[in-house]
Structure formats: structure tokens, C-alpha cells
Amino acid sequence: MEKKIKVGIIGCGGIANGKHMPSLKKVAEVEMVAFCDIIEQRAVEAAKKYGVEGAKTYTDYKELLKDKEIDVIHVCTPNRSHSFITVDALEAGKHVMCEKPMAINAEEAKKMVDAAKRTGKMLTIGYQNRQRKDAKYLKAEAEDGVFGDIYYAKATALRRRAVPTWGVFINEYEQGGGPLIDIGTHALDLTLWTMNNYKPKYCVGTTYHKLNNQTNTANVFGDWKPEEFTVEDSAFGFIVMENGATIVLESSWAINMTETKEACTTICGTKAGAKMVDQGILEINGVNHGNMYETRPNLDGKGVAFYDAGGYDAGAEEAKQWIKAVINGTQPTVLPEQAYCVTQILEGIYESAKTGKPYYFENK
Image (tube, rainbow, N blue to C red; front, side):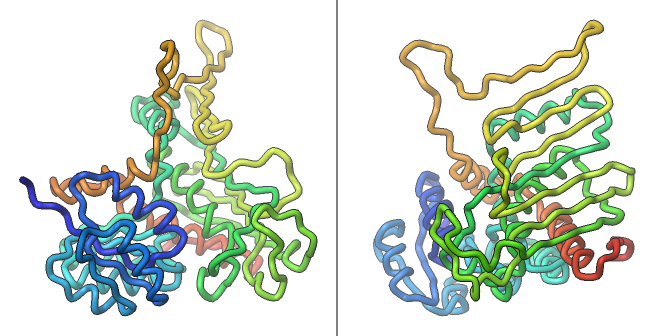
């Protein structure tokens, strides 16, 4: 029987329970052997539900990292601690999957990239939307040259009234930002990945605190406490890449707009274009035989009576490809250098919003 990959979970809150642990549970080659959380009961409950018999629990992640049998660490803590926990884990000889965003700023993200290079251990970031069928199809079409030169794109992450009111999402100190760093990061990652363009030149950004103080909000997760809502409620960016391509990034947890969607991208190239109408629905447009066309590929696997290929889980696919990369020594889907570029751009938008001036990436 092949050796199991032993995984330790640091941070047993919402994202660990919502994605990481149930996804890893579906990977036959994995054993979750250690769980850490500053709230001990969370670690204990996670160990009971997802751990192997005898799984250990901790409240200090440094104690967990001393276990030499652990191969892989999943970092599922608030954004502020992503960098130093990841660096410590890499230095302890572990491969690391860190939940998005990579870090609260580019400086901290760079420390993670450098640590991975220095230690020779694998590092990836939890951008599971790359594993969606529409995202994979779009990427394959781009690699086949269907779109030609992609010179304009729009990264969209807009919610009408869905501010996450649990945990520390609306706490600027812990998270480093609001919807831009939380959901805008997914849309930007999909866009850069599809374009295969990681060389930003400059950006202009704006952030808004227009709805923070409102009450009776109709928020789907319940009203927020205005005094705790210290991050932006909306953020927008205009990014110009070194090759002249332009990306518009729009993100909001709460905006007065009915046509909302998140983790979606629109791309326009010299040969064709594409739009994620919504997650899982992809529309491609172009010109054939002197006529314009629009087409939607069938990505749901349906079409045969009494058979439905539904139930596709991007989180589980993320976990499978990551563990496969660890076992085979191959590259994971999300490279740390790519996630670092995402963080650079997010930081640039925040800085531009603060200064009211364009932010240039030269020598950054």
C-alpha cells in the first residue's frame, strides 16, 4: 500500500470546514493527522470529523510544525497571518497550500515566494475557481489561440447584498481589505491566468465606504455592525499591462445593482472573445464565414436520458490536483509567482485609491 500524504490543518474555521477539509477527505491518498486553531474546541471538532484515529490537536501552530511525519500544511487562517505561518511551515520542511489571498500585501507575499525557493518545498494558493469546468474550457481555448491577442478583459466580483458578517471579514486589520482582496482576487486570478499575462505596468484604483454605516440592509447574512465594518464595501481598478493590454476590475460585497456575479471574467481578443455569463456558463463570440456568432459549450455533461454528470466540486478538484503534484513532484495549477502578481495588483489598487494617483509597478 502506498504511503499516505499526511496533512496538517492550521485554522479550523469557515474556509477550512467549507472547502479544505471536506475536499481533502475525498482524496484517497490523504490522511489528516493534525489540526490547529486558537479556539481549541474548533480543532477538536475538526479532528473528530475529518481526522484519522489518533489525530492530534493544537492551539499553537509552531507545535504542530514540529511533527516530522506531516508532509503538507493547509493554512486556513485570517489573511494577516498567511505569510508568517506559510514561511514557518516551508522552513519546517512542509509543502504548503495557503488559502487566498496570498497575503495582505506584496511584501509579505514575496517572503512566501522566496521561502518556497529557498526550501525547495511546494507552495500553492487556494484559487479553486481555476478548477471550474468553464474556467478550464476558457483556458484551453486561450492556449489553442482561439482568441488571438487578448488586449482587453474585465474581472467581475459583484454582490448586491452579501457582506460576510461572520469571522473577521469586515475587519481591516485582520484581512487587509474587503471585497477587493476577498472576492476580487478570484476574478483577477482567473483573468490573468486566461490571458497568461503577469506583467502589470500601472493601475488606477478607487475604493468606497458608502454603505458601511447603513442599517436595515437586507444583507443575506444579516445586518452588519457599522462600527465593525472597517474595510471598503466596493473597490474598482483599471490596470494596464506592459504589453498594452487593459483589465478592468470591479468588486463589491454590497452594490445597488441587479446584474451581479462573482469570480467571472470577460476577455476580448483579436480573433474572438468570451464571457463568463455566470459561474459555469460560458459564452464565446466571434466571426465565422463573414457572420457573427455566439456559442455556449455544454459543460454540464447532460444529454443522456437518466444520466446527470452533475455534482462537480471545484474544491475537491483543487485538492486532488494539489496532492497529485506533491506525490509526483510536478507543478500545481496555481504557482506562487502568479499569486504574487495578483497580490501586487490588489495592493496597487489600494495604494492608488489612498493617494489619488496612478500606481506604477516598475522595480516593485
